[in-house]
Length: 153
Image 1: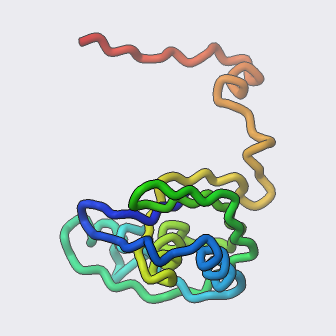
Image 2: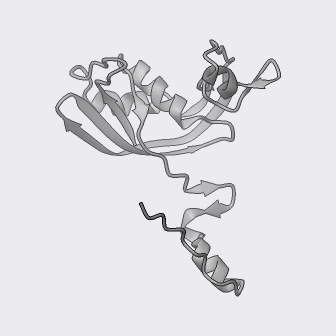
C-alpha cells in the first residue's frame, strides 16, 4: 500500500493528482529502469551497510542500479481529506526496492509518497498461496506447538 499525504516531516500536495495521472505514471515504471536504493538499505557503501551509516547520522549517497519492473498495476485508489492511498501489485527483478518505487512514483506525480505496508507474495518459485503456517509445519514435523510467552504486568 502506498500513500500520498501530508506528514509531520513534509507536506506533499495531492490536489493536482488525478486517478488518470496515477495510472499513467505507474506505466512509466514498467520495463528496465534505474533506481536509487533508500539510504536505510542493506546496500554497501565503502565496505559498510548503508543503513549503519544512515543510523549514525551520516549522509549516504547511493548509486542507481538497473532493475526491471515486469508488472505494476493499481487495484485500488482511495481519497480521504489530504491523502491518496493506493493498493498495487508489482512483479519485479531481484534488487528492486519497493520503498524507492513508492518514493519515485510520488516524485513523478509532483508530490511525495511512502509505503505503508508490504506483502511479498512470491520469491522465485515460492508463492505465499502455497505456504503453510509455522504451526502447520511443526505439526507436519511432529513437533509440539510452540509455547507462547505471556508477560504479566
